Image 1 (spheres, helix red, strand yellow):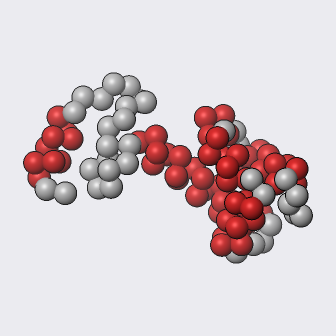
Image 2 (tube, one colour):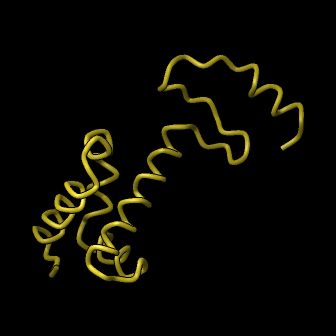
Amino acid sequence: MDNSTLEQLEKTPEHGSNSKRLHPENGLDRETKNRIAYVNFIIIRFARGFKMLITEDFRYLEEYGGLDFLRKNYAYEHTQSEHNACLTLLKVCRKNGGWL
């Protein structure tokens, strides 16, 4: 990214915490970055809780609807404790045929 683009981004006014201002390094807005960070965090916590490799955990959550649930319910789920979020994922996956 060149300096003129960075300067343009710096001049862009923010309008509260829901601003769609782009991050200068990767072009993602804050909400998207927060969603990605949260989903990654929960995937890791879920994997640790069940002593799974992260790749196994990711496939499990993807196959049994856990990741889709997190994506759709981010607004609520990210306000919950990591323990409650993992329990909710466990219930969602079991409802969809998961074996844990």
